[in-house]
Length: 207
Ligand code: SF4
Ligand code: SF4
Image (cartoon, helix red, strand yellow):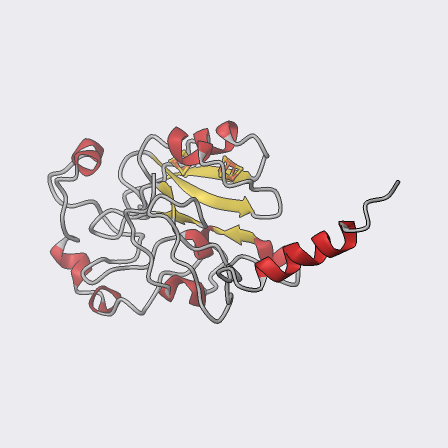
């Protein structure tokens, strides 16, 4: 025989909830702060003089379980140097339609070129716009950095860069007006300047 009080018991639950604390988040008007080590949008970091940390080794792409990263390396020359050492990442893309934000790529990176920021607002209306290229992923230039290509600091080796002993751009390169103005950004390989580079990322990133 059905319990005659069952419908009333259901309303009881509703009534009780009316007086409990509201947990609805008012996003996007009020954004909740993420955990410090949150895995968000990636950043390709630079050294203190503006040279790129990425050496185009593709280890991040091999580590990615979602096949979301595409890298093409190229040789640095003394006339055109983008990173310390022999190679740099000429093409770098992350497909955010595939990425699951697991962080395996940043663990695989030998130069700490790739880290993750706390930015999570990555929704967009087109699939194409969610494939971020190198111009969008590169960390913004900070005061005193010079956009590559430029020479390494005199008398230094790639190892000095890895050890963090290079702290500024060479004086000759620092005469470049871009070095004085952190809002001016290096061009992407396609020659297009991306406005996203002006976003204030911490070049240290999350690891
Ligand atoms: S976070 Fe994970 S899924 Fe995303 S690019 Fe890195 S390895 Fe691939
Ligand atoms: S981001 Fe790191 S792992 Fe990926 S290609 Fe560049 S140096 Fe290699």
